[in-house]
Amino acid sequence: MALCILSPIGIIVPNLFKSGGAWGEWGSDELKEIAGFVPSGLIKFESVWSSPFPDYTFSFIGVQGLFWESLFYVFCAFIGVAVLSVCFCFWKLLLRKNEA
Image (cartoon, rainbow, N blue to C red; front, side):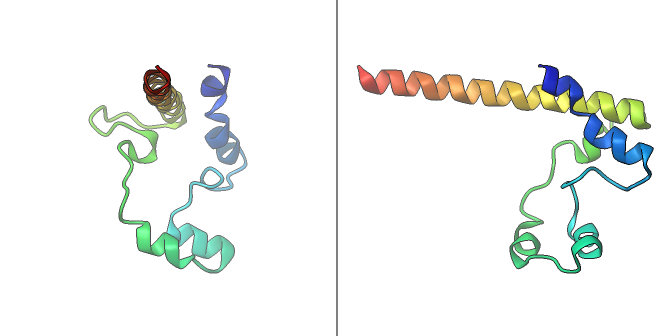
């Protein structure tokens, strides 16, 4: 829970230092600028997955700014923890069922 609440540090610190986006959350265009090349696998699979919440915002709400982006970042972290928890509980039930 503490890590979910601290997760916006990844977007707050780069914003404070005016250093661009969060580390590791680059698209192929940003990666080409930083590294000088883009791995072929990234180019190949970049269009396969699109985020359900692009830029950690909910477009239907219409609010913007670092505060809201940070709040949505925490919300997305909790969603991720909840989804993983459900998956692990389901997996545990399956393993327990196979033991019997």
